[in-house]
Image 1 (cartoon, rainbow, N blue to C red):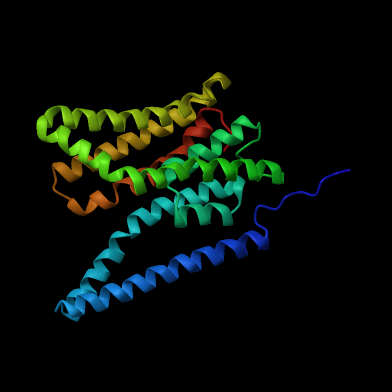
Image 2 (tube, rainbow, N blue to C red):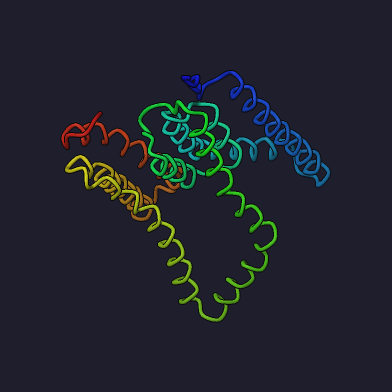
Amino acid sequence: MNQPVFDVNSGFLYTLTVIVILFVLAQSVFFLLKASRRAKELGITGSVIRKTVASSALFTIAPAVAILLGVITLSQFLGLPFPWLRLSVLGALTYELPAATTTASAIGISTSQAVSSAADFAAIAWVMTLGIIPGIFLVLFGLKKIQGGLNNIRQRDTKWGNIMMDSLFMGMISAFTGLLFADIREGLSGYVPLVVALISAVIMGVCGILIKVCKIKWLEQYAMPISMLGAMAASIPVTALMGGAV
């Protein structure tokens, strides 16, 4: 008997997603009102509060662009509701995308078309969800101790403290970098992800020069989405030139 095709954009998924996001938005409004009232109790003027809210809202645009790109990327095979939920509430692009694509590769399905099996969708959703939960408990119960240890190392030897932090960061980047070489065995087209990543790195480097040398400080908040958008735009001609499927 043929099983019904699973719809990654079903109304049920949209309903669950909207409920959760509305709850989170309600929390945000609640704490905004509480913070505003407390600010007035402390004697902070209304104009200062409005400027603070406006500047904070402005600086959320850059991260929001990166999140939107992540939602668009994941929606290609996971539909819109689930990526929208993940990246609006808890997830981060640097985790969600590798977790989803790695799981899809492990169960042997393509990330270029929508998931048609409920079991496959559930597997990807569980990996993305369970994989990020330990981080929540680590922050809740271990952040104070971890932060204290890092501060002690920096106080004893600033140089080695900085080296350790840079090493941790490079270790995380190295874990993601391995995904760039996953398809190299497919020939020239397998190098497309690597070339696109290098283009993104070049764009980020240019942004870094503009920030450091030309003192364009506002660019700090937009360097990541600019590099992502530039690399995504470049991926189309790069894929065509290298024989991949556009």
